[in-house]
Image (cartoon, rainbow, N blue to C red):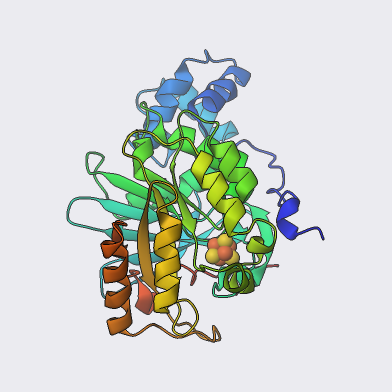
Length: 361
Ligand code: SF4
């Protein structure tokens, strides 16, 4: 039976005026070339957009005034707009971005002492239909363009006045299955890691997949790529297929083979994310199977106690069970940590990102 993720997700519609916001260095060169300017000016434009994070053409003082005036008249500089923000008691802020077609996606800004981590969306909605995830219940509306993915980063960094020299980590754990929007994801990756722009090191970017084996294999063919995390969440096919429909296409065995052949760099490990749902995925037997699975390839486990949200039908695990599972994995020599989702009180934690008011309009 064909699944919704077998088909490409719809793209954003065409625009009449070009928009420079979020474009890569090469695309900006082409854009300027079309205006009769030398393509190398694309580098100046790129640096102004991503390093200086200028948001109005008049700020581009590195360009001649005549060119600035021309850009003002012929090229948009339109980043996604923040239409709503909520800050959690733990300091993280969930932002709702409105895209140029009125669709909305969410991103989360999580400040730590030594860095900031941004949780990004890759699609409007998601085709994967995981039952514990609010976004999964929306279905897929469309892919984000590479520029829209980059836009979330620039807009959040600007909003929080984040200085250029402080480390930034990016995690694709917001709305969407990033490997279902592969080409735009990798184009955004190139732009975000470009040394002339934000220069975010590839090892600071993590893509979390629900288990799209075709995408994992494809990612493995790239020499420069983000790190890989797998949202595992089940230790038997029966359980996993019940909460993650993708498991009916690529089961645990198929996934383990894909992860086993994924070419890792020295010291690199695949992160296995395991959401603990009380009475569903948190038995000690689950813990033993999880440890055995994790030992089949270089990996580390993130245990994520479930964040209950309205209508999910699942509960958070007991603290005693969390520590027992942690101990069990450590004893089996599997690196393990418990990830307390940030932003829980503003529904910004993983599996809680969903926009309802204007979707589908
Ligand atoms: S958990 Fe991720 S892959 Fe699954 S439905 Fe939610 S957004 Fe999609």
